[in-house]
Image 1 (tube, protein in one colour):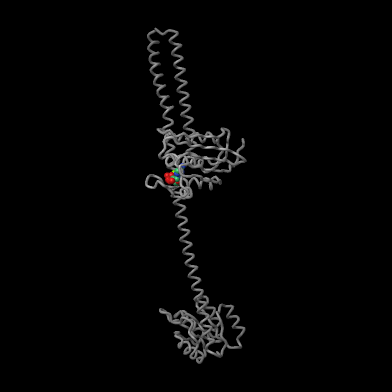
Image 2: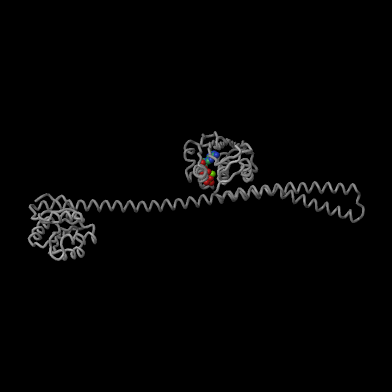
Length: 418
Ligand SMILES: Nc1ncnc2c1ncn2[C@@H]1O[C@H](COP(=O)(O)OP(=O)(O)OP(=O)(O)O)[C@@H](O)[C@H]1O
Ligand SMILES: [Mg+2]
């Protein structure tokens, strides 16, 4: 007897072999040989019965003769490969049936053995090989299924992550818009306040004038003086209302740009001024300064909403992190347009960062102020806006006590005046 390499009787399942052959001797001798090896063997004496047993008992392997009454081996093979494609089938055929054997292999038989079987070891070897291959295929399918499952889970996670990121970016935008509204309220307060004071002064003066006029005591010099007051007040009201109008339209543009994803042509210097105005309330009661170096004729076609978000985050970071323990912080922003590339250098003279902070600054959720209002998304949004929306680059340079420097390069879509 040959050594049993194959794990025929595993702990949970005794492998079943179905022998379909119309020759009783072949069935019986193969059965007793295989049972000695621990297989469970079931028999069928023709193709029809063989197929029915296969459907009913779901064997682990089939040994099938070719020439049989009712349903021949090729028909059995055809039917079984259609209904139970995973069951290995080994053809046992007479030496004269080579053509049919070749057909059987084409139809999906796993192997063949020539009758009369000269040595049962040949049979054992073929069965062993078929089971090894079946196990290999099963294992391959299992890996494939695991991979597909892992892939599905990964896709689901990526989708969830993208949705979460979009939501966070959206809430960051809303927070920036909230600051913008505060900036508008604060800035517009001044011209409107002056306008209201001037209008009420005008009201007082008009009432005095009316009284004089009605009493008939009005002198020419008084009329001239009143006309002068009228002119001054109306100038004051006009200037301040125009200023309020300008502020509203500049803020309106910034707010619209936040939701507009399309590039547009804009004057960089004017835009920066609008951004700084919206941030002015944050700098009240501080001695920090912001210096801008930007030629006032730079017109670029780009995404102004992204510019607003970038500057907003950089400036607020200098204020909250860089100037945390400082009275007189200074921010420098230098803009330079060269060969359709906008170079933007942003510097502050704040506390700076350690090399470790510097490395992680663009990582989402990296913050040194967790629990004190920091989410750690500001600089990762800046990074994404620069590299994805604006197709540019950003580099950070900093060391402790030496402030931060960001070098930003942004290709601009068109700049007709430069
Ligand atoms: N100008 C700066 N000076 C010093 N440290 C800075 C500066 N800018 C950023 N940092 C450091 O980088 C970290 C990440 O900044 P980021 O803007 O991404 O998050 P945050 O400001 O902490 O939170 P938020 O999401 O509210 O902006 C900060 O927590 C801070 O430690
Ligand atoms: Mg920040």
